[in-house]
Amino acid sequence: MDLADYRERAESFLEQIDREYYLHLSGQKPELELEPIYERNAGLFSRDSVEALRELASSVDGEERRGLGYLLHFALDGLLGEATRAEAEESARLEATLEVTVDGSAVPYRQVPVEQANEPDSSRREALEQASKSLLAERLNPIYRQALERSHSICHELGWSSYTNAYADLRGLDFDRLAQQTAAVLERTEQRYAPAVDPELQRAGLPPLGELRRPDIPRFFRAPELDAGFPADDLVSSFARTVSGLGIDLDAQPNVHLDTEPRPTKSPRAFCSPLKVPDEVYLVIAPVGGREDYAALFHEGGHTEHYAHVDAELPFEYRYLGDNAVTESFAFLFDGLTEDAEWLRAMVAADPEPVISHAHAVELIMLRRYCAKFAYERELHGPDAELDEMPQRYAERLSGATRVVWPRENWVSDVDEGFYVVCYLRAWALEAMWRRALRERFDSSWFEHREAGEWLRDLWSKGQRLSAEELVSEAIGEELSFEPLIAELSGA
Image 1: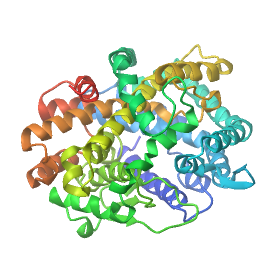
Image 2: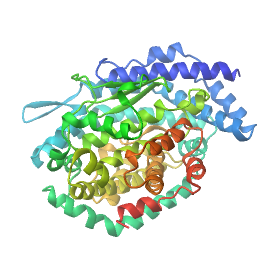
Image 3: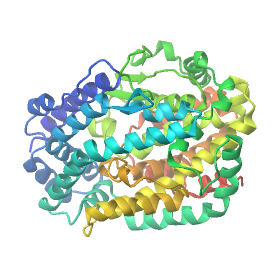
Image 4: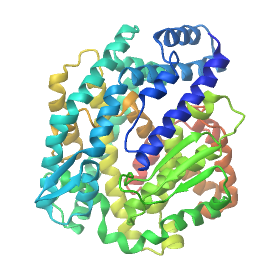
């Protein structure tokens, strides 16, 4: 296998596929056309390529094995993506064109969570939920399930005992150990959960845990009562001021492109598209306002600055591939500023107390939800999974962790490919460690110190060559742990 040629073709493919997703999700293309891209890159994701990379990776050690392991992960992702591209295109088409009708008004399917977030009437939020669930169950889930079954089958055919074992192997993680850690997170946050969340629900005029309904969650996360401190017209400039304090001039970054243009089918959530790392990175924004919108922009802005500062001389696999818990940790670090007392006083003049208490309640819901998602996905993708039983298992896992009745219909749509859930979980832990280190080195207003920016840029320049565990060990000499995160959420 010619590895130099494979790397070159792989980088070209990622640019093409990411550009297609960028154009579709930014509202510039109604259709998501993946098939021509896969056809132009025929052979890149063949079973022969996967098997050759797997054999090469198993025959070497050290740095060579690291890089080959990332290429193997990429190749399997691509093989599964190619095998399920028809389903991906059809589901994207349906998601972009389907509508739900409530009280005679049509709402685009993708806009339902936004509509729920902005809807003060709980009965209409519920009606939107029921209509959306019906479309999901009838039109989309059969497509998602077909893709899931094909992915499971291919992993078996390639010699892994299950999809779970394939991705534990590719990510180099001990899923049993991580399951023990996330179970401990649920246990350690159990007593804190209701006392932190229920007062915030009451403040928002919503029922307490145990009575709260799933369609109320977007409304709670939206927190319209906090809007006054987070105006839409200051959204982008607040991010620009923040990175300026770190020594970064957002307007002078030739490789960073801000897409703020309104389009009817544009994703309502900010997102980052690293089309060429580090030379062409898009930060896509549909400014609405409110703290959740700020958090979303800052999250994607964290990704953007990370990718924009990666060392251009790194090999392809360290610029684009590797452990995504690393880039997610920087994204969480930046969106965490929107709930930071010092940042709130300095940047938006908002009263920190209600923002922080609301944000901690949201984080507890999300953290516990993702711990349950990981446990569920291990079952879903495991060797003994009975797919017909999984909707019930999904509802049990998620409802038990969140104390909100979670809909069975989301059993496959709420699953990210390749166990990405483990990236989010470990990124939350890593982010808390980065924040503690920045405060210890520079003070609580670290975002105003150019030296802090230099420290971050050094970390960003490494791309994702190191795993989250390796990077935190190298940077601050500690083992990756959930303890700092639990301490933050417990008010310790």
